[in-house]
Length: 483
Image 1 (cartoon, helix red, strand yellow):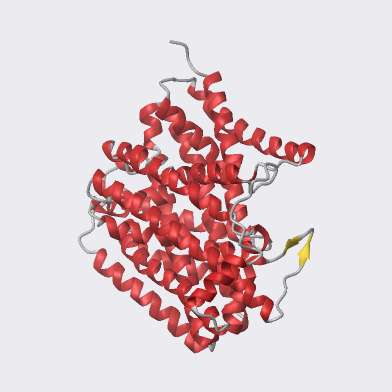
Image 2 (image 1 turned 90 degrees about the vertical axis):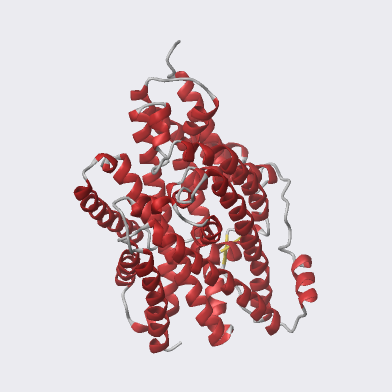
């Protein structure tokens, strides 16, 4: 792909986002950046959340990871459906009844200020690393595919992406993001469909033959009943449910959009509709995963192995798209990467800005003229932190989606424990000990997982979030106050 075509696509795409930003930024208020004036259409929010929930990580990691984990990720998808039901019928009504902007204010109402700050801090750490790793993979793809050939250094690509996101979100924030993410979700799904059809046509298959080839492939194993395996069905299902509750229901970037809809009924419909959208999209990714390995095998493309595991699986889909799928495939892939990058990162940046502004800067109680200044300073600080994390992880290897879920298990586990304790018990506890309880639970989870792997060859896998949350609940009961 020539540099001029590349530049034209990026500028055209960004111009479209800026046009949406212009129309949604009119008549904004001091809180519009954070709550979108609570007027978003629920169906638009649900569709737009696909881009936030998928990101470039899912775009390349889920298909690539099929080579090492078959279709076992589908077990995780089944668990997410149960998680979305919990979010729709338990968490969302509570958030809306309390009229929350930062969802961590619930912890202040239920327990007190120290617990509130602790929960928000765990989110800030989790989201900062999760968003930065998603941005890292996106920039690596853009560098590999396009910018290295133009001799543009990767740190400059990171800065440009962050500046572009800032330009179309800094004024009206979540109100703009609801609309831009819907557009970007449409592009993302289109890219996957184009890739599947490209491989189908290049292999001269009918639709029925393609389905047969996928279902009969050696990687088409869906259920893993080996109890010692990290991809065991029960581990995947339960962790899928808990990670969904944590990474969506307890995640400011995901719930902030839901809280911009008009009422509780629409919010429930939004969550349930989104659960269908995201499950369908991720299932398409798994089908694409088998197809890219079929295509690679027929074209003599092999990935290196180390310790019985394929290496650099995240690079296979970009490699095929840019070198074997023709110009249409390459252009579609570029748009998909840009769309997934902007759709996932803009929400995260807005959420980090919202959480820090409300939870630590007390922006809600500041005078109108100071709110904008605080928001702008926090927004700049969030972008700087994102840049530094991406730079520090630049040389990391392996499937980044696994890294994100592992980090989430240690950082969202205590948050999940706090919310479950608040929702299903009536206990109060000695608040000054809450940070120690949460941090200790995360450390012990990490130590236990290492011990079980070494001693019993038993990997918690994504289930570390369950162990972490359970330990947090135990420690909270230990420090609870008497009657």
